[in-house]
Image 1 (cartoon, rainbow over the protein chains, first blue to last red):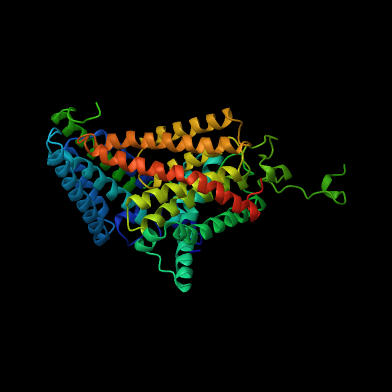
Image 2 (image 1 turned 30 degrees about the vertical axis):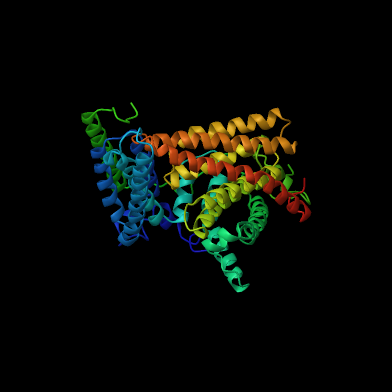
Length: 266
Length: 211
């Protein structure tokens, strides 16, 4: 497979093969994970629209370094549609129950700002990191063996199962089934049977075969996991992390100026 | 002095620096120290494969069902419950549900930007479900497994509801919508229990789940 055939220089941080691509492809997967984790904590803690707006602008700039602006635009358009639906529903609820607190567009905007920020950082991570780089990163995190193996298997096998889903869909087409939202609505149980049962059987077989192969290859002999090659973060990774921390600090500053009332966590 | 290597039928001398292979390692024993590993590699791989399958199934249902709607919500939760049940029946070892939860949370948190705040509630749900399974007779008791999954589902949904409050706390009225979503999801999870038991009967018949 393509991901597993990459050499170590490729997989460690993606530096060698990613040369000539955007900044995002040259960042270490650990840096992107740290930014994603920091983002998920920051969006929960902050509630001031100005602070979240600053983080949204920064995260959009971060995600745009991917060069996939069409996809980003489509995802943000989806969030905008969701927001319009929420506005409509809230307005309808307010009309139906006048005792409800009045609709405040700025306050309603805040959850969607959070969603948009998370979307930017997660897309940046997902679209610029190869499976093998993620596996190398997981190994470098020195997780316990019983956590590392299932996590690595999960990360490695999600793309394989997606390919399996494609194969199952093609088989169904060949057999004359057109599985679409309407078919799922009209025949939910049949759809589940047609799509889900072959997948479970494939998964069970894959689990057995892979488990036997792993044992025969001697996986689990070592007392602890040792990465094949120690990967050090480059200067650009430290700069990206410092930038992310500085932005979150600026967001906290804006939040402090606005006060923690009105939905803040503290 | 005659060494082991010179005797006929004796194993070859170990290469310096190479890991020493020992038969107990195949059954989950760490080498060199005689310390038995609780989880065999095969079991860990099974947990990982099921965790991957739950993610892919959720994606599949959402894509085929045209996004998030009540039907896809029910089906997504149904599939999750069925898979969790199949896993617990396949790996009857205390801690399986907790490990499955931990792996799911870890991947969601590190690789998918899932909420950091979901971690405690999911782990608490996993621990409580493990406790209920042990109290009701352990992993050998089928009904204990079903009760454990039902408990896990409701606790996990309660935790998700709490996290959704964190997300929409500026406009608490939005919680009505998230509450409806969580309730529909739980209906799907409950429906998954009988479906899962029926599915397990088929898997037993096919010889895939042995016990």
